[in-house]
Length: 117
Length: 406
Image 1: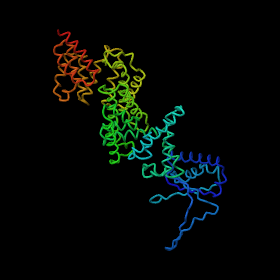
Image 2: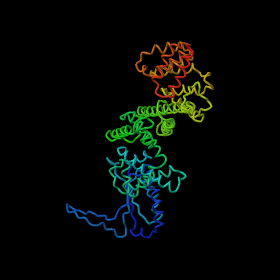
Image 3: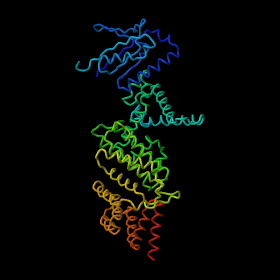
């Protein structure tokens, strides 16, 4: 078993395109998806990203923080899941019902466990 | 329900979980008064409790009060609601009840407090109801509960089913407490009949939660205890009439026995033998089974029962067992032999204030026709008997002796 970080990226405007009813359905599907992962013991944590992201950029001790510049694309949130391998993690990502509602990219990053692989 | 909420808020916040349940029930009652009781009140109640929990979670005020396992999921907008849905699912509710049983019956808590806590959190008894069941003050019960909760907080008693290595030992504590609860209801020594029968019912229900749970494999003693309780509970209603008069096993109208409960008892007794293990619960259940399977008192297989008591004595030589063995002995070898047997163990100090010792001995003397000897013994028994119904039963025997002895 290995941990995988799933980062969801969408276009910022898409949420406003959904009607209240569509949004309701979207939430319902999302909850069911998360609930299933939880019951299977595959979900370690997950959260949407709130407004107000910042970015800290630094070099050789000079650090500056900027508002996180999201032009069109935003990070919608993350999932930390446990899976047997990258294929299962990809399958988990593909199962996310968000794809039905809005154009989304999900990055699947394997996490390096202690002591390496 | 308290069990589920304890999973969310942690065992150390047991009182908080209880408050949420209390709130839910109050909300339910006021709602039901307006709109009538819904089709499935318990599902309704769970939904209210879940929403209450969700509100609390959303308010975010009590973050430090969540149990460690649940904290993480309850803090994120994506996972809080699915986490609550999951925690309130049927399987989780059952698992949580099992965890709660082990938490309530932790050896660090005194048996008295264990029972009070189990009745409060698992059986939903109010403090006045528990006080009534134990014939003690509400203040007293409250103290027991406070002490128990304190122990859970300070002792950091976890909300979990013990690990394999501890399980057997911890399960035994749990079963002992459940049996104590059952006996509290069954022993007829105190309290109101209806409340007492509820105690028996609850004891059976708690044992059933354990027997139904798939996470415990070795359940031989659980089935044995269930069988024991059910085989006795089946006879509960034949033991006393509407006026509170007690009937001995001999006098009971066997058509009043609850054969549905009895059948469950027999089934569980059979399941208990699968593991090839023997405990005092097994033996006691087998003895009850012999009593239940006899068509009438006369055809009781006393020889088999005596053999079982002999076996039980090797595990447990308490006064109750010695007395019951003597009764079986009197049926097999006659009352005279039983008197000799009883007299040989009279020295045991716990016997001196035990009314059943004198009532049993007195009854033996009636059987051997030694009415004169029986009279002072029965008088002593009447003196010691705690319950009016028992006193009047003994008085009948005494009157019989006095008449015979003229």
